[in-house]
Length: 580
Image (tube, rainbow, N blue to C red; front, top):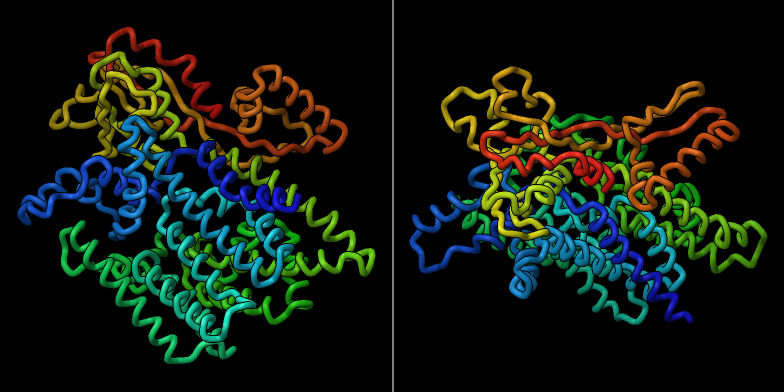
């Protein structure tokens, strides 16, 4: 029975990561450097070493997306190379496999492996209850589970840093020499991850190194050795690989990004937050379960102070120092979530093992904490997941077009607007999951609608379809002669609080309602509306929270190029796109 329970709890994390992946298979603009790089590696391959330098440069410039659409800073190709190398054998076995889904599954399972390894380390160090509570807390949190398979620049280093933190956990049966070597390996791994992937890991490394030195778990020479090894490995790898793929030598992408974002302060253009933002907003959202930071972490610091401090002190110091940078995003501090969650698990484990001593200790771990985990998971699957699924109109619109227009023409060209590229339309989608005889090409080279350009290039009739934003819609007599709106895609439009006396606009759509209808049909929709009205009348006194949808993108058909049979695209497609 205990083995079955352990298997179920340990399998929760990879199962939820894959569930979130399947529910939300598209990506956003922040993920495009990695996902497009993996696409190019799988599709065009790496130039042969026998080619001349000019031929290699021409291969990259004509085929690879990062030459045609460079971002503000270069990003390392090492992460995409790892993902492409793991995915390539499976692509050989099945050429028609959904490659974007495959690549994201590889990344998600890699992250899951790191989280499970960390849980195993907690079990060895502090016992099975602590490991179980860690897994339950971690699985019920939304952000890491949802973003574990997302090719953000922070995801792969999160897995590496979590694996490194596992090496810093106590090993009851290990000798002091073994523990010292494990600490050295952990510091070297954090150095490699910081040099290659994310510069903020240098600060994360610094706070952990300082704590190890202050507690005399490692010596000064050990830290210097680990730093030299990590710097040599990471710097050699990134300069060699990225100088080749960007055709610039020497190139250290993360140093370029650090100078651009921190030294030059360009990251402030994406928004500025107050110093306390991470502690007041980001950390509570990342941990999500209020019991973890209001009850369990304080309990751990009171009852199991030494191990709790070793987990929480370096992470809190990292967050506090990093808070002085003006531009803040939760993903910049995500590396601190596993140790903070482990600290909460320490407190929960103590309460669990001492539950028989008094009534409060008995009620808290046996009733309140399990219910809080279930409630947190329910919030993750509804209030967080459902709006997130509906937040990729570009991916939904392009997939809808492909499902409907596949097979109507041997070749279909699509112009993608800026919003479509930012919200899910990727190069991988030129290889549709539902393959037929149609080849697809996408154009994202301009943000000016083709029907509003001068009559130079490209000509007005150069595309079969356009996935358009509102300001791209034809509004003149000439536009209407060539372009016809055949469908639209709705997306999440924020949270709205209805007050007493305010009616629900049934025509605008609702994330939760449309999801229920997609699963249970119109009868399910009717049951939801009936239940909502009863609860508003007798329980909430007229208040209700809705997650509305609004039209974000439209599919335009070029009437001069697309056969009339394709005009059937429309009535059913909107339902498909908005109810996924």
